[in-house]
Image 1 (cartoon, rainbow, N blue to C red):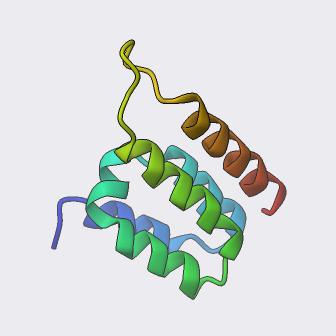
Image 2 (image 1 turned 45 degrees about the horizontal axis):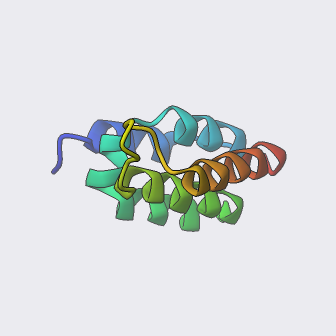
Length: 91
């Protein structure tokens, strides 16, 4: 069991896509790193495929090499923003 297990259980307990979308937006990056496979599995089991672009964009942001000023590259920010808007519309 990982230290993130209670958060993943909260995700599994979400009864609607809206609740799952809110969980995804509020989830710390560390959970995406530690329990990404579990998050992905929950989205697939819930048939919430609209969440997958956001999930992948968040993982890309977590793994992205930062610019010299410490910010994310523009392309990563654009992808994350677009995925967040898509997630918002598909709830």
